[in-house]
Picture: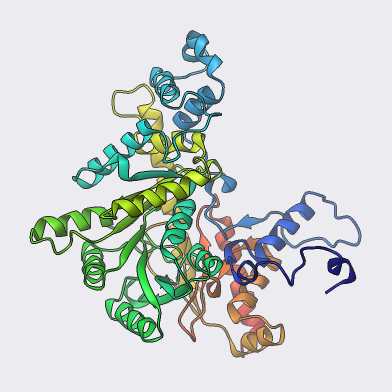
Length: 493
């Protein structure tokens, strides 16, 4: 401890140890270094003693942040938001329509949303504005073919806020555990760490395009129970982050049957449900309702399901506006009351984010004045993501010692890398894991920031890294290929 820190009431030795222990790799050391490089590039020519960098831009492929990587906002969404933020513009309807290109449906949506929330600068109902929750319920019903109850829907500040809420409710003591897929989005392990609860890892099957392996889940559950863990829930991320997997209906049915058998809450993270490149998206809510319909004896009636969605991903990509929702199905009403109390402590989710949720679940429809442009923008974003996903996939599978699963969905690829022994030895000398060493060298050589597989969890003896395919163009893909070739030559036999 330094003399300066010893004079402070708070120092690194007396703050909450759970905060220090929590890890969140996607914004870790490499992301911090990448930002320093970004600032250095903005000062070109370099200021002594800085040296010139071997690249002219940073590609932040470490995090699913679409608009930072030049994904354009959907015009309909932003036009409505402009009127919500400045309602006085609605007094100039002719100017909006004739001179600024606003559709009549934009004006009508803004007026309706304002009638629901009064002002985006005012608090809303703690569970979210009732009219917006009604829109979410209609969306879920149209998607799944089964009714949804607006009273069981909670709007949130992104799906992350929903995860935080649900974990706070269920993690009552240090013996509570949650089954979490490995590899996983580190939000789950980090939040459990903060709460002093236990992560119970179960491994996904890379040989089956990162699908769920029920035997692996059963083994993980038994081991945890034998160690005294009170396992209360299982997390499923579908489509997968970081894997990009898209689960089949049978995979979903198997998980739900297992959860009912073991009395586990199912937490379905479905924020990438529109990012599907192969097959179709199947929701856990529909899977549960199908099982209940096929089993009128009540076998699945007590199963608890929490499904989460967000405006941050898909073709919406409005991460910074912090909007999302979660739906509770089959929960004890007394528990749902405590969920409401918990979210009310934070007063309400961001109202502008709530409005974006409403537009996400209720976009322009055929016949609306904004429909054609919305479809053009939406489809253009989707096709761009798909093109880059396959460009990366093909590039990875042409690299020496790299294997990558076929891109099915989400915004990520999670290739396996086989590194030479000399590289592994050098990583050990630098006190890094081999995959951390590889991605660190990649950043320093190319300005491309990805995340080591160890940040998401991986089977012992395997190495991976996660990259998004959000960055525009494919030139940066070539830079990864060139770096990898040089790396293998440097450390090869």
